[in-house]
Length: 297
Image 1 (cartoon, rainbow, N blue to C red):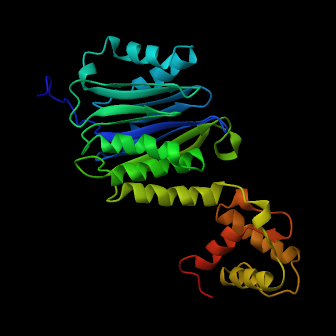
Image 2: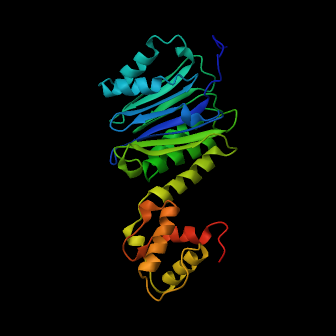
Image 3: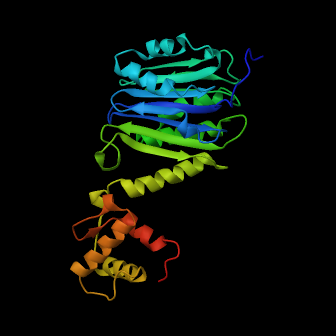
């Protein structure tokens, strides 16, 4: 039995906080049968750590927890301080990770079953109103055994957790939040990934699609994969540019007219990070150009 009644909908969800010591990234992935969970659960700051607040969520735990971490408090001390004067602490669930990847988590006695948390190496997983504890176990086990970037490992963990049961009420929203010093667009902030699916029948699948798009638009290309713009590649690029109305005729070489048309295409499609001043092109953008919906060739 619940000792208190919810004053508003509980943020019933499962989430994982992870840390990559090699790249110094901190991140959170979350899924829930709740509208816009990305606006509630994940909080993080590069060089400081991360907080995930859920169940009968108190969003002040995010900024307050990060401020405590930044002041030098340990995750355990932060957790104790956050709930100390909170009269609804029995309904709260949250986790805290510091700049070194050390963690602490809290699940109130009145959180709806199944509710609990589990710590792993450089990660902590937590959830409430779940089918079973298998969901939380899948989060940490997958994160620890998966290779790739922090974002990729978090998404894989989220996927496996859903397969293990997930939220007992179903699916609605998901989010991925990763911070790294100067990791944001243009290096102006630390928000490397801030992707949200607010309302979707398959939120994790949609989140993965957005992640792939983000990687295409904002990641820089691998120099070893670039294609020389000559012969067949040159012909194909010019054909595509003509179809876009950016080039009137064809040329035998990659000259300034073709380059200017191609640069215009890159800029109007927001591929700034993948533009090459050299006579080479990113193969992923070329694939995008060929598969662009509505293109008449």
